[in-house]
Image (cartoon, rainbow, N blue to C red):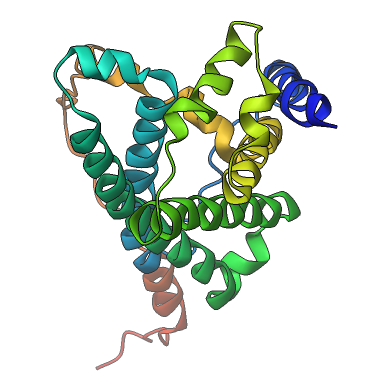
Amino acid sequence: MSTLVWIVLPYLCLAVFVAGHVWRWRHDQFGWTTHTSQLLESRLLRLGSPLFHLGAFGVIGGHAMGLVVPASVTGKVGISEHVYHLTAVWGGTVTGVMLVAGLALLIARRFVNGRVRHATTTMDKVLYAALAAMVALGMTATVGTNLLGEGYDYRETIAVWFRGIFWFQPDPALMSEAPLVYQLHAIGGFLFLALWPFTRLVHVWSAPLAYLWRPYVVYRARRGAVPPAQPSPAALRDAARLPISSGRP
């Protein structure tokens, strides 16, 4: 069972993640978009979207720092374990709160606004449910275990197991000893990667970075005589309704 959950499942989810993106690009390029609903509702979106994206960037950066960078590397550059722990916990809490607030607003607008609710697909509902579960587990681990609880050094167990997946040497025993909330968060993370290619999240790989270096678009006015203004349909209709004069005084 341990081998199935901590070795087979991660590789299966990564395979679906890669193959799913290839399939989506080959068969659904017109659907490769954010499916934005900004025209339907913008007030909640204007606040919720920046909070969600800024929080997501911070959370992803924190996960990359904690899982990819070994403790020995941060120690060599002069970052003590105490400083790293404080930065990770408080930074994760702040960005996590931003992510929770933004996600809550984005979900709320899907139910509060009727037009946005009708434009919400089944896959959108699955995506929001998966995001909510992932965020809830992550905040429980960060706030409940590391901030308010006794703490857990995931860099010596979960991070080593995670890096071992990409070196094709994962050790399932490292995850078997982790707290349950961390285990569920790890399983949910890989399942979320398998879901990714079939949702609107594919727009992440189509960020318009070319706008940063493309040449400016020059607009020039066309010179020439200005055409006379044409009467509007309403003016023509009103003119047709006027009585015809007989010409007598």
